[in-house]
Image (cartoon, rainbow, N blue to C red; front, side, top):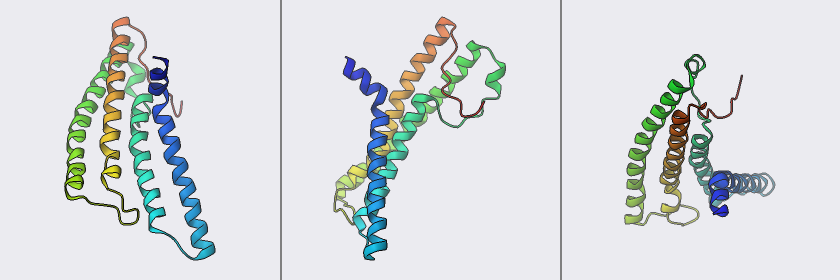
Amino acid sequence: MDTLRRIDRDAERWLLLVFYVMLVITMAIEVLRREIFSYSSIWGEEIVRYSFIYLAWIGAAAAVKERAHIRIDVVMHYIGPRPKALLYIFGDLVMFVVAIIALYWSFEAVHVSAKFGSVTDGLRISKVWFLMAVPTGFALMIWRLLQSFLRDLKSLRDGTPVFEGDKLFD
């Protein structure tokens, strides 16, 4: 059980670290190759591109978990804990519906790619692996939205302040 808690707590952080390191190292190698040897590869550009795509979608799920998405919260400063919890629950429900729809439609691109066997130009790897970034990101977002929804319901029930995430500016 402790392992599952650690995965739940740190999964996005570790995945983001892996993709970021892969992106930076590959980009550094490609810049050196281009500047020193006047040669670059297609596969390096693809690794950087697809690492960035995974970074974006996994980062979106991490932002949902930490409530770090950009939002205008001027109204939140003037309302009590109960209406604040209700507003956050409403926002989570709206985002949940959007994420479910997006998850459903994102599998269409994956299905078409798998059906026709499309591969990347440089790596010659099935594009399914890279197109799965979108459904993976939305599935993680749905999981984090469910956790957020349950956390907010508990705050609403107990009358405690709702989790608002870290503030960028105060």
